[in-house]
Length: 232
Image (cartoon, rainbow, N blue to C red; front, side, top):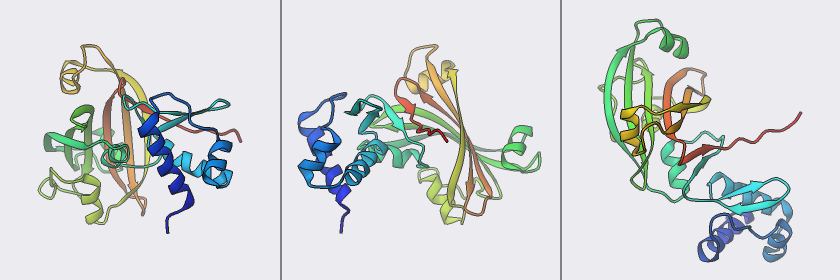
């Protein structure tokens, strides 16, 4: 049986699709409570789901508004690019730019807690949503986790890792601003010197083993990161 909040979320999605445009205000919590005969907790759960999907956004003290499909807003939840885009109704795809093996340098040794010189599998991909370039992803995996021969270029990387007993459940990310170089601008189809977001990620398994070091470059005009913070 579906939860009540899922029915409310579905009704709001239909409302947005039929009569609202980006940045229009949604009905208030009280109005949604009365309209659907549910509690405030249920309404807030439904809105939270829609925020996670990037369909709406909340302005503290003002209300909830329809999001824009022009900007993908990433929540702090650990999801793959494919899951992230699919949840928003976009068709995700990838184009493999390169796949090769390198010996770990000092940075890879430190990031992945492996000896300098250890073999690492590298995959570089262009990530797209509805055929629009969104990000350039560069992933490093210890060869002890997944070798180049084992890597299936056209399949989900996280699914392959799970198949080998290395399901990723935690990631630490550092987000900084950067300026795209000529090659990156061409791949992402933006003008020279455009700004971007550089996301450095280290991911680990349920057992705490370090699985992945990644450096992703996102178009700043099409992608943002949304964080919720609280005061102790």
